Image: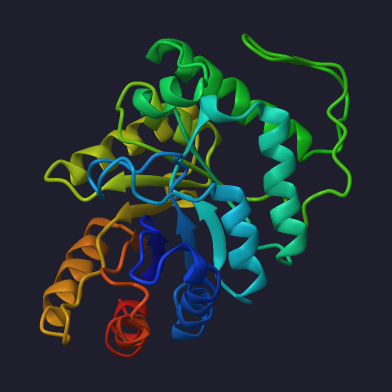
Length: 290
């Protein structure tokens, strides 16, 4: 099992003026510790599950470019981009640029999106859920075309383009992996089966059922279920002094038994670098042996 770090909160004790150097240190430490993924949320306001709306939040793709410059091995992605935040051409170009400049380490994490408050607050369109799913499928088809040799026109239900020119092309082959996030059984997991290289689910009591539904969708569309990397959002909390380490290892073992291959989550107090080093020393080697 691989372990990924998501950084969902940028309200750190030393404030914005120290955020650049401290975030660079987090990226280097996590990379050296063996985290296989470095991720950020794609939000513009802080979400209530993490902190007050007014807490500091950085724009995702600018931040990923910064993390790329301060790491060498980890894959770089959002968990998860809302489809309505960026037009698909801009999104494909941003991920391509990240892939090229990071030496082929970019992934596209994408979903139907949900945060109406920040969308209304900043003036982003917030279509009804059914339309956002239509846009999600359009966008996935669009970016796959941009990452192909076909630079002709595109016509989807909500997006049209005259020429999907994308130079330089991404370094990842055949293209940057696509992770579709969410556990919707009728639409989201169907889109995973049809288009994605990875899914991202929450560690909830119905996780095993969600994986069974994904398997059923794979059977329906003729996709090999084992081709899809199963990732789960799992907080990575070993406690202030490592007292919860075995509890975390046991939970990762349980997830592995369900077929989960990657656990991505936040580390409390991530700017305290010893917490990342502890996970690298005590958790990642055990998880890698599962």
